[in-house]
Length: 164
Image: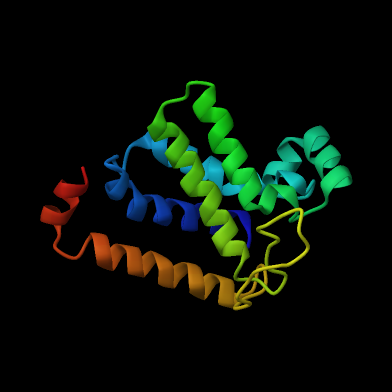
């Protein structure tokens, strides 16, 4: 998926997950961390949005591990969460970053290439519903946004107040 789709999917995932984590779905810091997490797996692609902004790092990762390898795996998510938790970051911040990261993986699993979730094992996982940048990608993202809005905003201000 494209960067903008990853951010939208990540934010939608955060809005859905935050209440379960007893965190605010509209906290600007958590939303920013979720957006960052939703882009972070593509650090392994020098031409991605995050890759262009971290070119020496993304080029090195791409050369060593390839695109949709380690950074697109459950191993990377577990490692990131363990590293940040061990470093003393607040649980809410770690959760927001992880939700964004996981949303990226889930979205990429909707493409024909799928993901090697159990990297370094070779098997790939996916449900090929759309190609990156296709109109189907846009339809899936819009449908997800409407679903999240329907579930979390159906009763107007009463539902919004409980989210805050």
